[in-house]
Image (cartoon, rainbow, N blue to C red):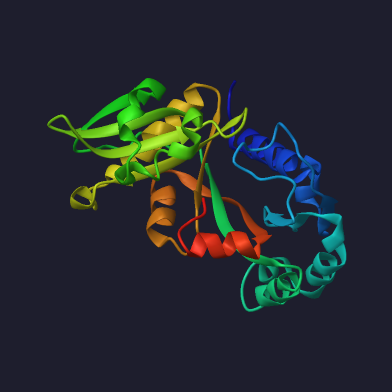
Amino acid sequence: MEFTNKRILEIAMQQSAADSGCRETDFMRDENVIVVSRKNPAARKYLSLPFACNLTSYGNNIVASIDEKYRSIVSDYLHRFSVAHCLETPNLHVLNDAMQKEGLRVCFMAEYFLPDLNVLKALSCPYELRVLHAEDFAPLYIDAWSNALCKKRAELDVLGIGAYDNGQLIGLAGCSADCETMWQIGVDVLPEYRRQNIASALTSRLALEILAREKVPFYCAAWSNIKSVRNAIKSGFRPAWVEMTVKSAVFVDEINAGKGD
């Protein structure tokens, strides 16, 4: 497959449509769209479907994938504020307050990045780099590499790039096959080796390896994680879409107590 930036964005929107239960073109409409969330085997494997409420925006509008029982709450909210303001405080408190009466709370807020083929290139690294595969990951499911690999979904970890200092692994970018067409990148560097451009070298190289396998690499970061966002941009990625997810209050409490996923 010959990728272009346009084709990469189309693939991402197709995947978001599978996740949300809408049409790809819904993300390009001027008005907001509300659809009922349903299970879909083509959705990203880590998503818990159906959603109570998930808001996705590629910049034009918001597509809300919801449980039908919350339609009036979400509809009123989307009509009250602009697209950007619906996904930030203080306006977001309005949605949270309404959902909290239903035993739900705003939980995840994330920004997603796609590679810009006009700038993506293999960045240099002062250390040896090695391509790693699933069979190499078994001893690496430890806290040091918890962003690059996910022990709970180890079966999805398919490819990685490791940075080595005299044979010691000091940085790792890994990707999970979260869906048929897109693989998600995560990266870790040991604290004593940071600020040496290792993360961007690993991320850019892994992105190119993923594209060579005819998959689309994507990168996710909390908007407040400046270090991660800077790495995405330095590595040749650009902001593509944002999501906000409502979960049960019990789930949120478990996350805050360190018990959740």
